[in-house]
Amino acid sequence: MSRSVSLVATAGFCFALCACATQAPHSGLVISDVTVVSPERAAPLEHAYVRILDGRIAQLSERPLRGEAQIDGTGRYLTPGLIDSHVHLGAIPGMLPNQEHSHPDVSRAAREQIPRSYLYFGFTTLVDLNSTPAAIARWKSHDPVPDTYFCGAAALIDGYPMVDAPKPERYEAYPYLLVEPQAGAFLPPGVEAAEHAPQTVVARMKSDGAICVKTFFERGLGDRHDLPVPQPETIRTLVRAAHAAGLPVLMHANSAEAQTFGLDTGADVLAHGLWSTTEQVATGELTPAMKSILDRVVQENTGWQPTMQVMYGLNDLFSPGFLSDPRLARTLPRSLIEWYGSREGQWFHDGAESVTKTDPAALPALMAQRQRVSAATGYLAQRGARLLFGSDTPSAPIYTNPPGLNGRLEMNNWIAAGVSEKKLFHALTIDNARMLHLDAKIGTVEPGKTANLLLLRDNPLRSVEAYDTIETVFLRGRPIPRAELSADNASGASASTFPASGETADNPGFLIVEGSNPRG
Image (cartoon, rainbow, N blue to C red; front, side, top):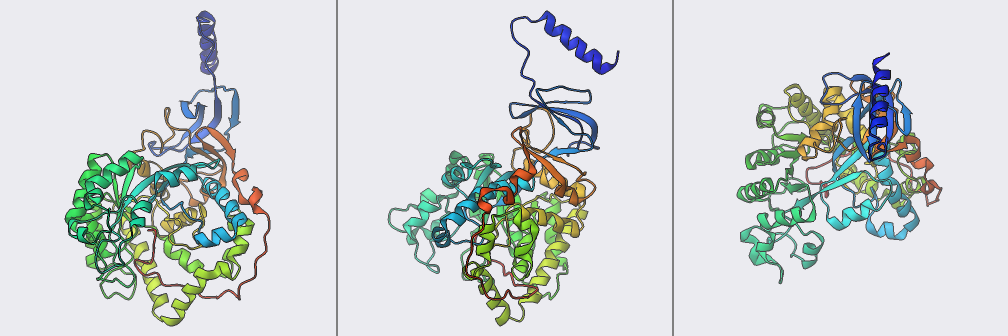
């Protein structure tokens, strides 16, 4: 008698004896004869059987299992679902609120599709780095929708005389604004500085269900030194309060000065690559000063999100073929894509084009930034730094950061920078889960974990193109064929005609200046 038959026979005998008081347990869904690729394993586990029960992985076996439902995994690879730890879910990419209001059918179709698009590209977990409980609840009202968490954004936005007068409405819309003691005199009536001190803000975030803190060091457009940045002790206090509450701190830090500040104040993650520097460097080379910052990132085990696709997305504004890319048709409703091509939908492109026409340094600056962040990412990867995957979708009100697809393109950027497929896989799964303190729930294919899984035809440890071969997305144990998540299968994909814009500019690049990202 074979081991597997013996096991079944023994189990049957046990149930016969123990018909003991309860019925046989619900056997759930079994994925059979699949190769499990999971980051905690030194090598893939071939010919495995995975039982899913009540939304969780109940059993992982090298012996055959049977379930009430069975999926044949022969020749397929089973991985954890992917985690994008840097998204912004409040807006439709490329649409302003008044434009959404003017085109309710287009915006409705877009909002219904966007959660599905993240799932289509394998992202079963998202972290919105600037949200509130009410906004997340609206997002989660869709079905299906990835598991979604949020950071509270502890931003130093106003309260100083050199910026626009503070408005009480800001404190209602952004409940986690930071106020430093010296700014108290400039607050609007009814707003108390103590209510926006670091400890109070962190306590409010924790109570609201945030799993992380997002803070900022940003000089703004053109590296303006008249704009306020936080005092080091303010952020150190914020970090101490966050750690006491069990929350990691991510810092928007896209310049050499900002990353030094983040390292000095104890931020856990630097959210953005090393885009900008005050050093007069015409190319994307890494200078000794830049390398010293990156060496500190390695030595202090600070998380680092490159978010290279921000710059590539700006470049794509000027790609004549972007809106006809077949991948976009699977990502967004046709009505929204057509609106993007209209004169109204080209508003961001038109503004960007005016910058490139008036500033001859725009293209060289963009190219240097792209080269620099790619070189920095490769430098860190070679030294074993803690790279964390985040796409910054959308980085601005820009249509060239489409949900899900933007993350898939960011994967290509990592590989081009010299990151191995294995390191990318870890960054997309267990490393993000550990940083967010979610590794007890997600990030690996192990019993007890939430059954957020991907079934693929190819092994992602061999090639990044494997992520294009997803066949089934499992969301809390629910199997969803990938084709059902595609925008061209959704009801919102119906055609809608808009006035055509002028001829699309054929310009290969666009300047991104530090601070040009309002969401970060």
